Amino acid sequence: MWSRLRALLPSRRAALASGRTIPDALWQDTLAQLPFLRALTAAEREHLRRLAAAFLDQKEFHGAHGLAITDAMALSIATQACLPLLHFGPAAQALAWYDDFVVLVVHAAEVVAPRELTDEIGVVHRYDEPLVGEAMERGPVTLSWQDVAAAGERMAEGTNVVVHEFIHKMDMRDGAADGCPPLPPGFLGTHGRRAARAAWLAVLEPAYQAHREQVIIAERFGGATPWLDAYGAEALEEFLPVACEAYFVNRARFAQEFPALLALFDAFFRPGNPVSKS
Ligand SMILES: [Zn+2]
Image 1: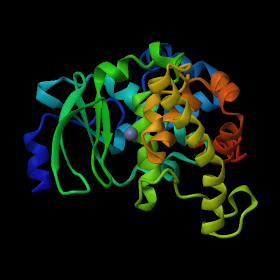
Image 2: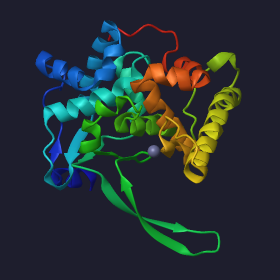
Image 3: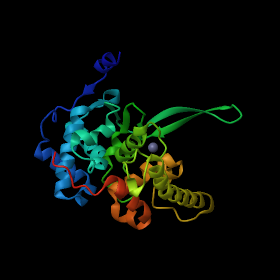
Image 4: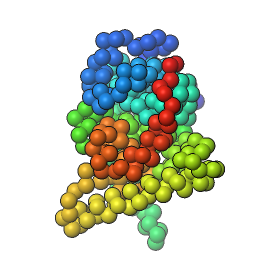
């Protein structure tokens, strides 16, 4: 069934990458489109290129409603998706974070998803939710190309739709979208998974609550609008990807706004190991 479905969809396994390296000109163009990558070291950029090539080799891109996915589009998405994986070892090991799915669905622009919510007295509310991206547990990642392509312009505001959806994937790697990805043994000097999780939440939760309060004061009482995207105030499991967007695309501003989170994210995303050579 699945393979048949695939055959019916306009599918693309990016031709440029299978087992090969990414052509120089295409890579240079991609770097130019994504100015936040200038903050990386040369070794990190080279490793990111290897990760992106391996990602393209493993994943399939489907353009929704006939949208043609060019090599440049696929590479831009792959590169941004792999940014959080820079310090998780060789490509094969790092990409295990994303091995629960194969398909990326790319829409030309944001899509409106019909939603249904049953409230506590049993009334069903139907509404439309505009989506720029979505990550399903053990399912595809959906992205709006218009929003992916705006990554460079949105660096100052610290938002990035691709990083957002792939942080959801990392969070869901242990089965629950709960704002806490699976943490390595001994994380922050803890013993056992429960203690590691407690240490993670002890930093993330107060930052989330403070952001939530700021957003509420801004929206209801005309207080100063926080720099970080207000969407992060929706729930802890949204605060994590929203904060990570800012961490990955505007580290300098993020460091000023969230010093405690910077240290937490560095401990997780940059666990002191040098960039892998494979
Ligand atoms: Zn989200």
